Length: 114
Image (tube, rainbow, N blue to C red; front, side, top):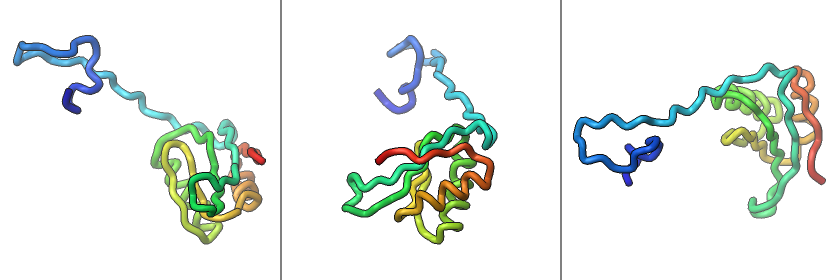
């Protein structure tokens, strides 16, 4: 099956050349205001070659807003990282600093993990 028909609903195959497939439309994610976000800040080393990273999980919103928040955190910490799948990864152990920055920005954030 090609990518064209991957999200088609109901019909798997049709011999009718004029058949119009119905597709599952993904819902647009709406970014919650900072006061309603429930973020968790983790310290993680798993599958990273022993390197420590700070993970911020639980972000609800668009990918653009996630990238904007990640860029702000990376800039304030002075390190690299990335943002994808609702998670922000900051290179290094910056859990306390990230918690402080999120609190100043109005986000509800907690330490999580060991």
